[in-house]
Amino acid sequence: MTMLLKVENVSKCYFGKTALTNINYSLEKGKITGLLGPNGSGKSTLLKIIAGLIPCDSGNIYIDEKPLSYRTKADVAYLPEVDIFPPNIKVKEILAFYNKVFQDFNFKKAKKLLNELGLQESLTPNTMSKGMRTRLKVVVTLARECPLLLLDEPLSGIDPLSRDQIIKAIAREFASEHQSIILSTHEVFESEGLFDEIILLNQGSICLRGDAEQLRESSSLRKLLEEVYR
Image 1 (cartoon, rainbow, N blue to C red):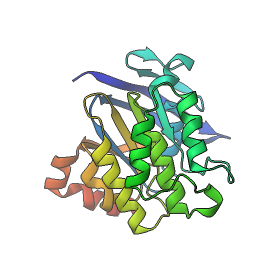
Image 2 (spheres, one colour):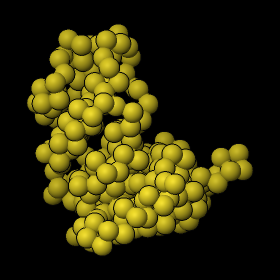
Image 3 (cartoon, rainbow, N blue to C red):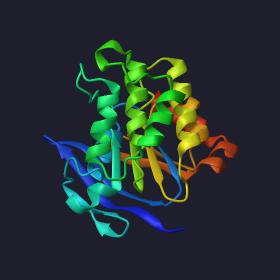
Image 4 (cartoon, rainbow, N blue to C red):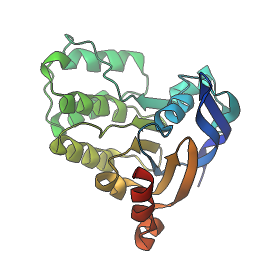
């Protein structure tokens, strides 16, 4: 397997408070990693650093063997936890914008995903539920045909139907030969079936990393997760 992402000794502090401490991690092409942990454990900070949105204080990141820079941003699609769309713009206009801005955007795939996730092109974000807005974010992210997809809490705070639809869409549309996904979540027990490997963050440090299937079989994952969340 070819290595797509390498994170070396990455640390980050905010106003003297440690967010990440000496994170070391590598991701092969064709893998889905579950980045797990409670709120405040550093998941979003790590994804934003990999996406090039915020700098780390120390350490290095390589994407497809290239040091993280403006040149690597085209290799990464980032789905943030917060809403990102203007409230009054129609879905069809959002797709047109993404199609114009991103060379790797697959417009046909985006329209197919819209239909599968029950979204209409005439809708605007201000008329949509949070679950629907999250599904739209998933559509425009999965339609990017870049090597690395970063999904920050796409399952958080939405209705069970939307969570189920999003999990199925990721499993169905994941192009395993060409892409890798890191999905951060604290909605663990609904999504763990997606993952090839798992990283558990707690207070900014990796406290568990391993093959998801082995962890499921040993049942150590559920026990450790319950302990950390308590």
